[in-house]
Amino acid sequence: MRQWHKEIDSDSRKQYDFLIASFILTFVVAVYTDRTILLIPSGLMLTLFIASKAYDRWSGGKLHLVNRRQSIRMFPNDQGNIYFKLQNYSKAPVINGKLQFVTGSTVVSEAYPYRDTPAGYKYSLPLSLMRKGETTVQLPVVAKQRGVARISDITFFFPHLIKFNPNMMKYLPDFETELIVYPELKSVKGIEAIFEIAQGSHAALLSPYEDVLTPLGTREYVSSDPFHRIHWKASAKTQQLRTKVLEKQVDISWSIVVNISEETKLGNVHISKQLENLLSYAAFLSQYAVRKGYQADMYINGRKQQNPPYYYQEEGIGNQHLRESLETLARIRKDQFILPLDELVHRMEAQLYKRKTIIIIGEIPNGARKQLEIWQARGIRLFQVMEEQGQAVAVPLEKRRAVHA
Image: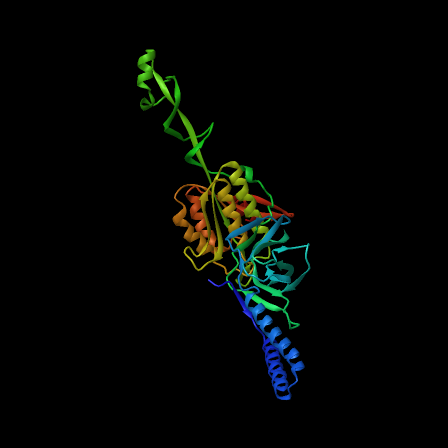
C-alpha cells in the first residue's frame, strides 16, 4: 500500500511552464539571430527544469514511515514519548524538512511549540533525511487528561529547488500509535467491608465452603463429624477413627456498575457533570479488587453499537484484567450516548449466575430500583458510592434508603 501522496500545487506547474517557455524562447531567438551566447541561458533553463523534475521524482519518493500497532498507556501527569521512525530509500537527501501532525488533547508536549486546533494540538518538528538512511523523531509528552487519542494529519514538508513554497507529502494510512490516558485513581471509603463470600477457588482460613478434592490431612474424629468425612484408610492404620481435613475456599466477587448519566427534574437524561470523578472511583475499585485478589467485572451504561450494547469488562483478576478495565474507562467519551440504567440492570440479570456484591457508582434512578430490590431479596448485597463532603463513600443501599426515608 502506498504510504505518501505528494501534492503538486498550481504554482509549481506555472513555474515549470515558465521554465519551458523561457527555454523555447531563448533557443528560438538564438537560432534565428545566430547569437550562440543566448544558448547559455537557454541551456540553464533546460538544466534547471530537468533538475527540478528529477528532484520532484526522487525526493521523498521512497519515504517509509514505520507504522506498528502500539499503545502508549499513562496516568494523568505521567510522561511518555511518541516516536516517528522514517526510512528514506531514495537517492536524494532531504534537508531542512518539517514533520507536521496533530495529537488529541489528552497529551501535550512542553518540548515543542504547538497550535491548538479543533482536532487537537498541531506540532511541527524539524526533520532532515539522509539518502538511503533512517531517522527517528521523538516527541516527549505529558498526560493531561483522561481519554484516548490518535495521531492524525501527518504531513511532511521540505524545500523545493526553484519555488518558494515547500513540497508537501501527506501520509495516507491511519497511524497505529494510540495514546491512552487512564482515569485518576480517587479513593473510596468503606470498601474494606464490601465483599460477598461464595464457594470458589481462593484458599482461606475461615470459610463455610471446602474443596473436597484438596485434603490437607486428618484429625481425630468427634461425634459431630459427618459419616462421609471419615478417612477410612487413616482410621485403619491408627486403629481409631480419623476425619478428613479439607482446604477452605472462598470466592469474593464484585460487579462494579458505573452510571455515567444523571437525570433532570423533568426526566431528561444526559452525561453526568461528575463523569471524571465517577470513572476515577471505578478505577480505584478495580485496582483495589486486583490487589486483594477479588474476582470483578464492570458494567458502564455508555451505549455501543456492538453486542452487548453497553461497555462491559468481563470478570477476571490480575494485572492484565486491571489494564483492560482501566482502558475501558479511558475510552468513555464526554459526548457518550447513554443506555438507561434500568435497561442495563435488566440486561445484567443473565450475568448474575452466582451471589456477589454489586457496587453502583453514580445516581440510581427510580426506574432501576425495582430490579435492585429483587436482587436484594435474593441475598445479593448492594452498595452505592456517593460523594459526602468531597469524599467518595460506599454505603449499603438499604442503609441509604433508611436514611432518606
